[in-house]
Image (cartoon, rainbow, N blue to C red; front, top):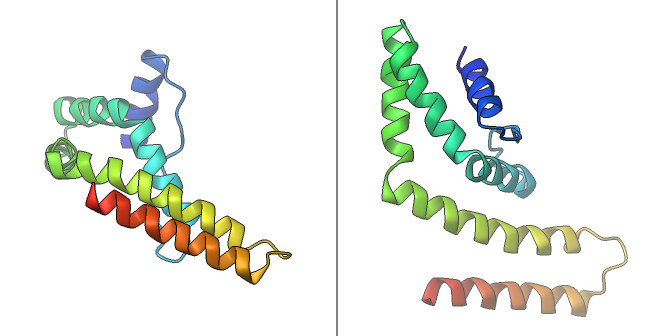
Length: 125
């Protein structure tokens, strides 16, 4: 029901739905995709939750929808969403590069050091 409401609102707004992902703690790729999907679909997600709060007759689902809607609109969530997207994209690029079969050790070390400096710079800014 929740996903159907989400898809309906996305279609009404002419938005292309990027599939929402669940995070896996072992794969950077999945986390990056999950964050990107939430950021890309943020407005549609909020509208879907508002529709659930108004139209849903199941009290437990309405309560969860209200709680989730509140959390998604907090400064902390929005700030973390933006920061995590930047961090995960930095890490993801290096992660992909480190998995290439012909990568030289010196280049790998340089990439890791560069990534570390980028993350430090991000933290300090």
